[in-house]
Image (spheres, rainbow, N blue to C red):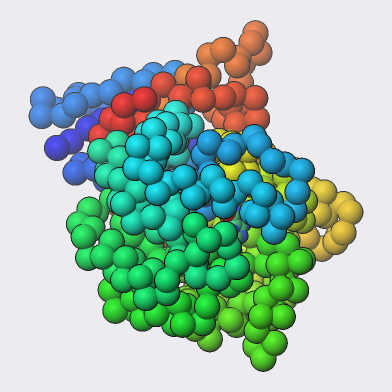
Amino acid sequence: MKKIFKGDIVYTKSPAMFEINEDSYLIVENGEVKEICRYIDSIPSDCEYLDYTGKLIIPGFVDIHLHSSQFFNIGLGMDKELIPWLNTYTFSEEAKFIDLEYANIAYSKFVSDLIKKGTTSSVIYASIHKESTMLLMDLLEEANLRAYVGKVNMDRNTIDELCENTDESIAQTEEIILSSKSDRVKPIITPRFVPSCSTTLMKGLSKLAIKYNVPVQSHLSENTNEVEWVKELHPDIENYASVYNKFGLFGQTKTVMAHCIYTSDDEIELMKKNGVFAAHCALSNFNLSSGIMPVRKYLDYGVDVGLGSDISGGNTLSIPQSIVSTIQASKIKWLESDKELYPLSFSEVFYMATKGGGKFFGKVGSLERGYKADLLVIDDSNLLDINKFGVLERLQKYIYSGNENNIIAVYVGANSVNH
Ligand code: GUN
Ligand code: FE
């Protein structure tokens, strides 16, 4: 099936610059981009033609770190740092997902908000509960979104309701892996973070990851007290990243680590060597007083970096808001702490929000030939005035001053997503 989209098409092939195709045709075959043309002679009769003349067409946003079971906590409890925040607000909310009815209400609203905000691919922490995690996978599948979804694993240092039996935690994770059949919504192994997981649990999860070639997600060096705690728990292991590495959860299969603020040069080198992605979560890092990730350093080392909303540490699912905060954070980091960490440019961060994070999924996040036709149509007419703006200026205005109401259509694999 062929589709042709017409509009002002913008994306980033590389972090350094935008590819801008004003008033052009995006030709899609079997859900993948075939080419972009400035002119076409006529629309073939076997083609669906989607005329968005005058609108922006951009890749769907990619969020590579968020907690769906914290959706109802968005905006609450921003007065604490990570560990007391988890103990005061977060664990008690996640415990509610033992109730499938509660999960259905929360996850339906969550999926609908993801679509509204234009996030077409996401890497999600659900909760420890197998049934509600599978329910979320079904809802994402029905909605036609792309996602990795993880049943959270934890068997120490949490409230009783969330503290799993180690063998059951591993067995239930395996059941989810064996039952999932979708190409778009897939399981991901999710040890919450080192303080929540015994060494037996980490080793068991690594075995599953390798046996079924399933990716891994976790948290790394988000908060100074957390880093100290990991040192106390594992005094014999040289650093936090090496704890995951020692137990087989650090790039043995495709891996993403959220935050990475207090990571040493040795750890960043290990990330590069093992092909581990970093999820930068600027909004969460502000809200929980965690710090500012030195993103420039990761880029210099050649580590893949994408953006994470990290709700509900982050206060919105909006990736445009994460883009703005990421650029602002990089400016403050440069100004206040390290003049070698040059601020991130608009194109570099747009790239992270699309193709950079999209790499975790494969050919996702760009509109180059062979990429999945995951795209957003942006009507920015309310943002324009008597001045004549170019396509790139219009994109800047939309990201910095627009909102979800500017998104008038969402497509995944060129199929329309109801929103
Ligand atoms: N580290 C361990 N669990 C969490 C969580 O739920 N949110 C954040 N931001 N960090 C974590
Ligand atoms: Fe997180």
